[in-house]
Length: 89
Image (cartoon, rainbow, N blue to C red):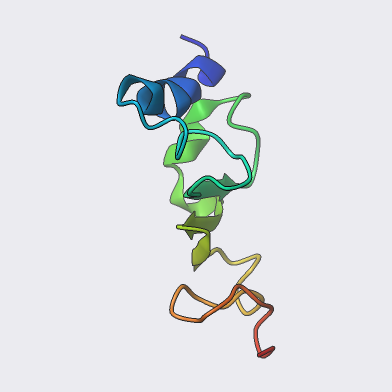
């Protein structure tokens, strides 16, 4: 299985199997969004998704849950009403 196939199996294909692909499983306007953003291209080596030091941002339900070192101080946390640069309300 290629890295792309593995990512698809864990996202869109799983959502389709559960009949939830109209709400989750891919990045589209109007869908619920949980995203893991990493430094690097997981298609070049999917194992980088296991390396916590490469995690840049984690979005849960469309809000920043975690900001890695490169983004600390720039994004607010999930407890705020909106995702904004730090200090902006």
